[in-house]
Image (cartoon, rainbow, N blue to C red):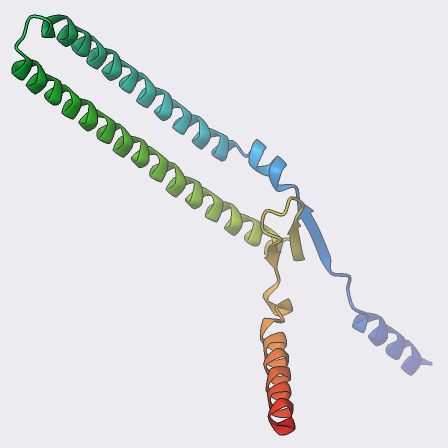
Length: 177
């Protein structure tokens, strides 16, 4: 009888535990993540300051161009053409500088967003591991599996089987010739 109880207890201990899985609504998470919202606001302000700066530069250039048009009527054609060329060069340089500054803002935003998303990925992985999850999925096709227990990774197993199957098919095809 004692042996039966011991076997019953041992059998109960060997029963597989249910694997803990969950999902995250990544759209809701990213919309409500304070640090990401702070970053968006920071770059919104940078873009607004950029826009104000180049609106001001554009107005100043337009004023300069209008003054030129007014003065050009009293200039010789050679002098007017020369000044016009200088104005067009200046406008081109303003445009190039504007593109470069905007690209810098965009690059900085991408870099900081990537760093923040990497931090978020690490947080989710740490959270999953520390809370006993085997898998955490994304509801919104963000990345499929956000966290997976490394012991459940079957990539090598499938790759070996797939490559083995291909070798078998190649051998069969070669034998049929």
